[in-house]
Image: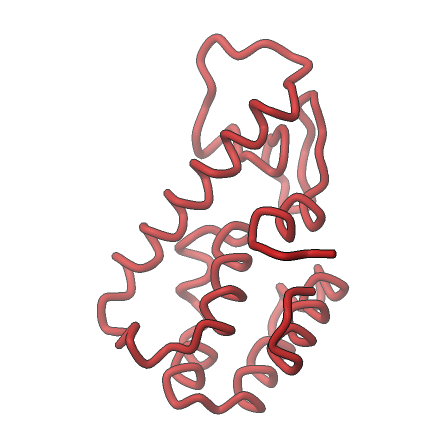
Length: 147
């Protein structure tokens, strides 16, 4: 059972102890750590699950902070927790700049217009490329529980 963002991302990203090319084309390792965005000097492989979990924690924090700083126009007090959980997953996968392009979805979240949020999620290349993950996040929004 998924109970938090870390378990969700571990499931969604999967673990790979050695560097690989992710579906987005970036050299990655562990639980989706983007080596092109944040190189690891002196790292040895295969990577341990413990080290990958440390990187996941750092990456999530860095991506989420950057996303919030890049979107100061959003009234974060109006964004429901269920949306925040989905945004954290998307910010990890897409990066802060990629998620910031979902302007209509973000505006719908501020209005708490769930159907518009889902429409804008589905009307994206992200949805087409990662449909299973996107559908889990949509189900999470509809049911209010981790998926």
